[in-house]
Length: 270
Image 1 (cartoon, rainbow, N blue to C red):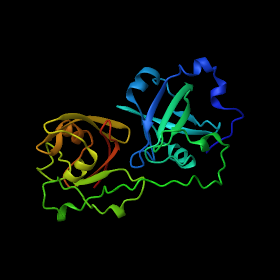
Image 2: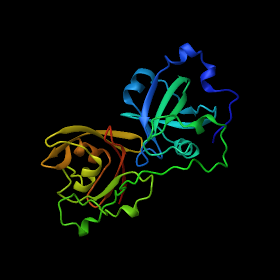
Image 3: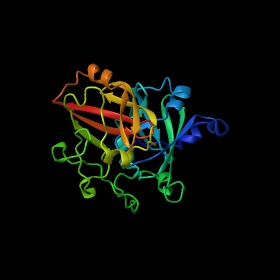
Image 4: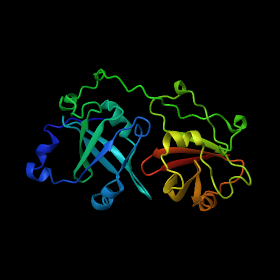
């Protein structure tokens, strides 16, 4: 929940020092960032090794939101409280966000409009919880990321569920696919559904990239390879299966929570 501040955040730091404070830039995506957003790994290594569990996000109007910062093996995320911050500030798809760390886990956030690159004038006004938000037109984007079931799929897409109807996807849904594991098909490698890869993963032929599979608070490093247009795990899958006691008959759901770092949050159903 937002709280009022008597003065703008920048005034609490001398102007000359303020511009030397560590900052980073993120582009907001309504497909990946409605519930969490990843802090750049390089920024964390250089400036954020001692970030607290609870951080504060402050807008130019002085209002503040408390968010929980969760550390994974490959990075840190603003999670609990982030969704409220996004909704209260009506952050839209494509908006640029700059985060300036003034110390002790407190960040000064500036937002820049996706269409004109300018700061929002509304962010400088006193926050009114009854306000219904600015009149904005969201981009007309194809938001399909569902897949039809394996039983009805004649292709070799690893049992992925696939349903390409764009009207069925709600705004804010994270791209995902599900796989029903079968022997011996999935014992050595996992093949990604082609429709999902074309839409969400950009890999050239024969390219190998690093990826991360996160289960609860543990993360496994993987290597993915694109061979003749088909993306599959090349390294790390067997270790991931053993570490999570994955077996045939289990349904695995992979949520793409960070497309830049290729990180999936994985859940299981028996």
